[in-house]
Length: 268
Ligand SMILES: CC(C)=CCC/C(C)=C/CC/C(C)=C/COP(=O)(O)O
Image (cartoon, rainbow, N blue to C red; front, top):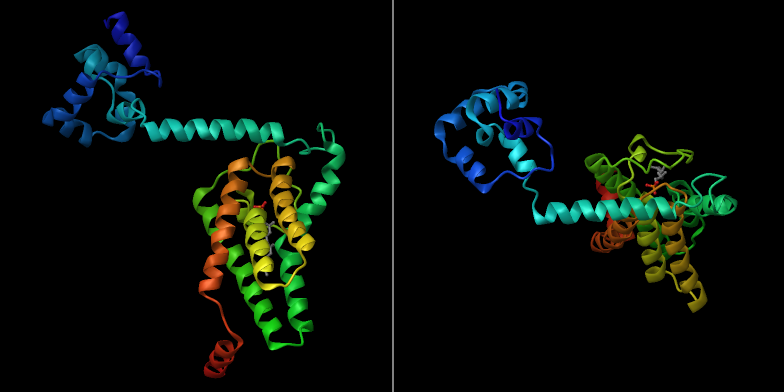
């Protein structure tokens, strides 16, 4: 018959902290370590109360529980950041629905969403490339096109690796999405806005008010993602960060028309 204290340990509440003594004992006993290693995961999980009654409260916690009960400082900081992120994102998702507190601006936010979508950007770039009458203009548009395609691929890879779900208050009514777009980290609109804005500001000769408008547009794209409930704040923040550095990558890999013609000559 286990003592009340032993029963409590057998219940395995996730918030309990084992004594350092317990960790030391479990780690240093080669026999019990061998036993634990030979047990199946199912058996290990189910063995808590049985061993509690047999060996006392100090030896019955399985190894993985001990690790979960000893979160690192980085783990705690990350969990706290994510909790703040979820809370802030929910509060800022003011036009996630028509009947949300700012539901009346939802159509405007959806317009901003379309302005940062991949299809208008790719179609616009192809159009400008076709219309451009200078080799320099065509080279810039070609590199913008490659940058946009690279962005779709890189965002898709990160989304598939991280697999963070979109906020629960999001209504999935976006047009033209890929299957990875059910995931939210990072925001593809934010990467495109940051990379596209940096690209335009570097390569186009724009008047100062237009430069300000480009920056304002990029910020609005990011803000609209959270207000529409599409993303958490960290998805957008990381998206801006990633888009900014994607541009640096595009600069480093810049394709000149001369090298493209050479490449096409080799292939043809
Ligand atoms: C030619 C080609 C590969 C076009 C792809 C354009 C396209 C469908 C991009 C996806 C845009 C999209 C819905 C991204 C999701 O953005 P989030 O901000 O919601 O992550």
